[in-house]
Structures are given as structure tokens and as C-alpha cells.
Length: 111
Image 1 (cartoon, one colour):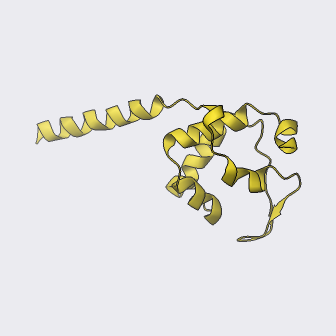
Image 2 (cartoon, one colour):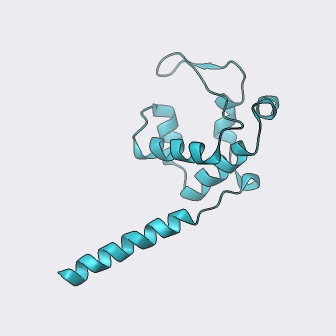
């Protein structure tokens, strides 16, 4: 029993280490699903309720990555964002985060 527990602990440590090694590549980012809402100044979404969609250009990569992982996990509840994040790998999340972190709010609005 102790050997099984030790193997499980080692496996979980390896998964954490592997996730920490993911480095975002802004040039590889697949942002087609993002720009339809997050690149439109003053855009308001109407599902599931009317709200102001945030411009995310210039946000820190760490913040964007954290938010996407929270949507993916279900800790953040917006249905559209949850569906999009759930379809993304850790590498794709890191790439999108790097893409938006490399922008300023002004350059993101021009795209």
C-alpha cells in the first residue's frame, strides 16, 4: 500500500512539473474564438445576460492563463467561456495568454 501511495505522489509531482514547463508562444496562439468578442471596443454580449466584454490586450499572461484554467475547471461560470476554455490544451492556453500579454490595450483594439 505504501508503494502505491508513493507512486501516486510521484505521478502527481511529475504532472505539476510538466504543467509548469508550458511556455506560451504568442505567434502560435489560436485567437480566432477570442477576437470575436474581446477585440471589439465597447462590445456587450447578451448571453447569458447583457454585460460588458473586457478588452484583454495588455493583461498579464499569468492572469489570462489563470482565468482560462478557472473557466476550464468550472470555477468561473460563464457558459461560453467555459466551453471555449474546455476545448483548449494547456499549451493553447499559454499561447493565448502570451499573445494578449504582448499587446497593449490600444493595439488589441486595432486588430
